[in-house]
Image 1 (tube, helix red, strand yellow):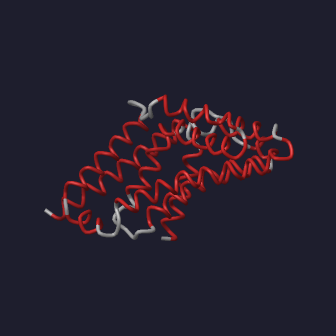
Image 2: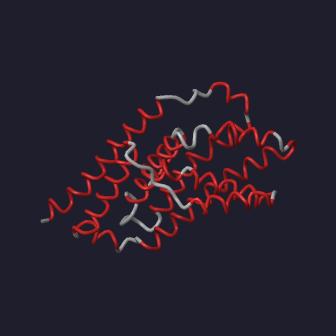
Length: 217
């Protein structure tokens, strides 16, 4: 579980560098800076909200795919090929053939709730980030999620905890120490290069799941 947590955490850090997340760091930090004495508190609540949102998703996965699913996943060809197809779709998305997006109405409703202000507004601000970044973080979060199913009951929760901390901690740190923003690399072509590299990693995961029914049958 510890090694899986570390891999999930690294996945979160990689997700932070995606084109739909990375440019949002300075904008989010500048928002917190305008909150005066509450800046650090709001930044901490923002980071915690990101973690809570992903951990809830991990709990749902744990309830759906518990330890009993491990035997099915290790022997039956249907779930393995289904997961392989999902990873291929993720890879094609990273290659730039299409984007996986959520309905815009979800994002708009979450953005409107930000106007409530206070802790509730900050929570929906974090939810908006999760929804907006869905198109380029889903393949990474999905890789963590799909590789956690069929393990222990805690594995999906540990995976989502690690992934969310990888995204949340940098946002919070930059808000606590805004001077670090000057050392951040600028957005550029390196982001697309990273997406292509990740696309090949997604294909490797697809081959892993194709290999199970190949060996079984």
